[in-house]
Length: 427
Image (cartoon, rainbow, N blue to C red; front, side, top):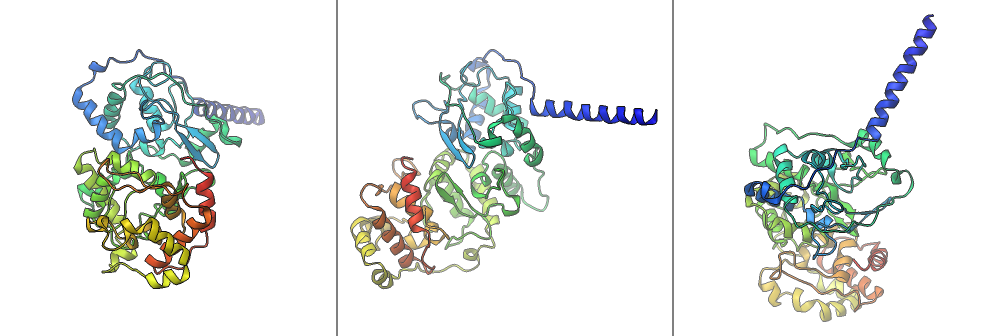
């Protein structure tokens, strides 16, 4: 009799566990709603949502065609396959127009769509879970007042078990930490505000932290730098390779304009981030700068600032004569001392972080892809040389720049970086 009761008890526990797993892996659908009328939202709340959307750079990921803002379709490469950003306009069928505020909040905080489908963490809900109710209200108001645009993004199909979306329930169980971050009472309100934005809507560590084999951020290597969309997002901690210290004021200027006069111009995905941050309230950007500067307070450059930029012209010309010739023809009119651009306060190449990182990825990418103005039409630009220089010439130019403007050893991965950038075109 006792054995029977024990067996029944075990069976009930197992049944309960299975039921819980089913509910967790297959969340219920949330009923559709009629798209809210745009004029039903408070205009101040909508304006707040617009600022928050720019902090999160929502358009950067969810816009593939500039004429169709927020309509999705942008391809986001991952180790498991390509994720396509979805349509988040208020279109009732193809977008999120039929989503209630409850459905929107569940997607932002738990990574579950209105119909119960698990989202992939390429959509950084593991950061957006930090948002407050007020922030979610404002974001929802802003999105629901955008122009509805028809058209669905291509279907995401990932490899292996990652292609089975219910498996994301297990990922969430292990890696998702829901809820806001408590303030640190030993820090200032501005620092705490910056940390909340960096950990939440701005999701900075999504790009600047390496990921493990499951696609989750490696918490033991937070802000250690990582590869993202063919670029290298450098460390934002004591491992920062910056030549000059990132002060609060210089970080603020860089984040608002995409140009650091003592560092470099924003390139790759960071260009879009700075274009968005240029339009948000100054206090928010200042708070982010305060927090991020504190992360890099123990970096080598913060402890010892070199007064003059390195320029090993003779050594570089001897080691890489072809690179010297290419630099004279393609780069010197802008980057040589005395050039008009340099006289306007543009950063010296020796101060740019890309030349000082352990890999050649960003230097090669900038040479081949050029630089779109991070600050708009009046900002710095650079032409792309992918069609003008062959692979060997790009390698020689990159090696010349590394030798001339740094005291670091030669890169060992220049050829591989050129191949990867070339194969990744068009971007």
